Structure formats: C-alpha cells, structure tokens
Image (cartoon, rainbow, N blue to C red; front, side):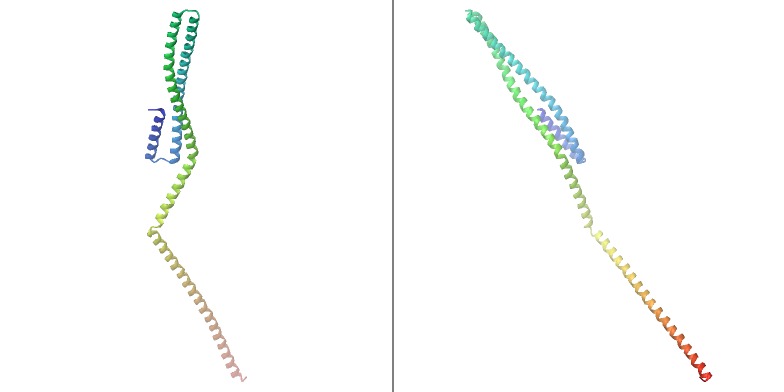
Length: 224
C-alpha cells in the first residue's frame, strides 16, 4: 500500500469515528486538520527518503557511465598502440559497465517517475490541508447556522402544539373577565357618587323649606 493510500485510509477511519461519535463540529474539524498535518509530516519524510534513493541511483548510474567512457578511451588507446588483445579486454570491460549502467538507468528512471508522483501527491496533500484550513471557518459558520435553524424549528414545533394556544386563549379570556369586572366596579362607584350628590341637594332643600315654614308661622303670630 502506498503512503498516500495509507494516509487516505487513516483520514477515512478518523472521519468515520468522529462522525459516529457525533462530536462537536468545530472540534472535529480542528482535529482533522491536526491529523492531516501529522500525516503530511510523515509523508514528507517518506518522500524525502524516496528522493534520496533516486539520487543514489542517479549517482550510481553516472559512475557506471563514467567507467564506460573511461574504458572506451582505454580501448582506443590500445588500438592506437596496436595492442588488439588489450583493446579487446578494454572493450569487454566497457561492455560490463554498459550492462550495469543500463540496469541502473532502468531503476533510476522508475524511481524518478515514482518520486515525481510522490512529490506531486505531497503538493496536492499540502494544498488540501491549506484548503481545509480556509474552509474550516465557513463550515463552522454553516454548522452554527444549521443548529440555529434546528432550534427555531423545535420552538415552532412547540408553538404548533394546540395546548400552547389553548393556554393563551384561556389567559386572554381571564384578562377580558378582569377588565369587565373593573369596568363594572367603576360604573357602580360612579352611580353611587351621583346618588350621594342628589341626596345632599334634597336634604338642603328640605332644610330650606322647614326654615321658611317656621318664619311664616312667626310672622303670623306677631301680626306681621
């Protein structure tokens, strides 16, 4: 399994575990970014190791090619000296290094291709981590908005309960009853106040009438 396949497996396992536990979204996102960053560090170490292997293979290839070039010159020198036997020996040795160089070339090319892919994957992982950091705030805001909407819906569901409205209706009727009683008492007090005034005037009139009757009797007695 490649290192990035392992990282993907770890991410999926962590995400599934967090979702199943229904953890706080903000805490979960922060933890995911921490996990991704840790996996990135591990992947970076492995990619660096792969790059080092590729460089060692390239160095070995260069050494074999240098030896091929060296034995080619030696074969040429033997030919110029008229020593065919030595020239053949040099060419045989050159062939050995050519074979080794070809083997190293194949390994190096394969390792280089793999290393290039690993570096591209590492860059992609780094970009994804940065993108996750940028989106974290938006996701948290969306989560809080969704929680607020859920709270509102729960409140509305409670208000849709008939018993709630029945309570309001009963309270409204009670208030109406209290207002009616207050108005009745006010009218009664006003009526009673009016009757008292009328009684005062009636008593006053009765007093005036008695005085006048007594005055008339006194005048009659005195012949006035």
